[in-house]
Length: 229
Image (cartoon, rainbow, N blue to C red):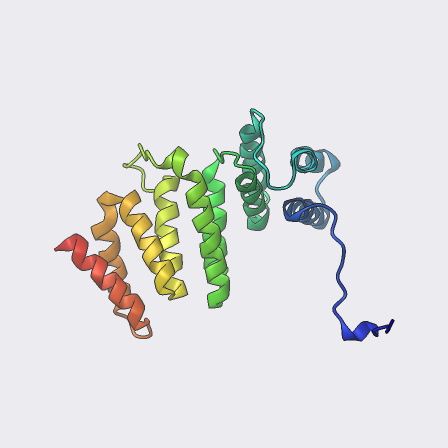
């Protein structure tokens, strides 16, 4: 039997658990790194570490991406998201939101998640990075739809349901990907019927600037005609 030299093949590392469990381990590793770098006191570190350990324990018991037949997990997620937001690290907040999505747990503290995704979108540079943020936003919108789609606070422009869809549309425009733009515009049209005309009027003003891709401008112009004529 021939023996292949190591440099002739890729070396694969064996991972313990599934992808969801690996993501939770990375979440905890990131928190530990941040806690150490910022010199968090032991008591403060434990305040964060205990609910993170709960997420990991649930992963081990039910799998990293399985629905959880338990009550009050959404309360753990809500408290953890709010606490992690105080550390001003968007990746921690997004990681907990993704944990909730994997386990079909409601995210009741939505504002920190929306803000974290907005910050990540603003920092994104290349098209692939922007597209990745769009995918995250798309997943959060789909996950939160059942709980937020009633949208009873229409007088509040900062309500998560509105901000999520506006940010999704803006991020889609930045990708310059026609399919993503159409998806985001359709979602905004359905979710925010009272704001369609104003959104596309503002978007059109920006789309007339030099350097805007023709496919992007055409899609904005079409929606503007549809909702303002």
